Image (tube, rainbow, N blue to C red; front, side, top):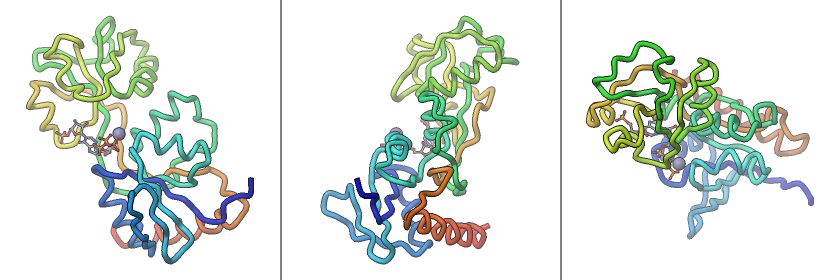
Length: 223
Ligand code: PRT
Ligand code: ZN
């Protein structure tokens, strides 16, 4: 197959990262013609197109070579790398982007007198991040049950399906509303530019280099 001569960037179709990601790309000088189905946006100036997808699909699309770059939460990127064992493969965090900040944390019911990870031994922890949680538990030598849920993780302790949770926290409001308390942080997250560790040896590599340069300029101005 002939290598594509246009670059593809995957980003979230609709969610917390959508607006800031589009804004950032605009400030990097990229403009797009919105296609009708809004899954694929054709780049008007530079030969750079957009793929609008669920954030969870972004690391896989890069790993499969469907697109070269992606804007995604570090939490999603690292979960993919841990669960697929792709740590050593060419899917890297190229730049932190400074928005979508949150943390992946352990939270327990208010009445749980938590002081260290060992207290989670033999307990059930609900999460949407079984890979990152599993790695953290192993690192601390804790054997706990991991209950994987796609969403509404914070309700699990109240329902009696888990003793603790491991979920994203930003303001902490969701935890308070569910009588939970943040006790340990596994990962500090923000949106990142994900892509290949080694640039493709064709026009796309030159384009990525150009984009990174512009991105660094934009980020520097913002800081
Ligand atoms: O449809 P798609 O799968 O693309 O979207 P999504 O629903 O999976 O993702 P979305 O839009 O909710 O979040 C996208 C990314 O934003 C996440 O992967 C994080 O990197 C980042 N981010 C930043 C957050 C939050 N802040 C956040 N607060 N993602 C989720 N939350 C949720 C959290 O799960 C919890 O339910 O908000 C609640 C906690 O917020 P506080 O402020 O009450 O603490
Ligand atoms: Zn998602």
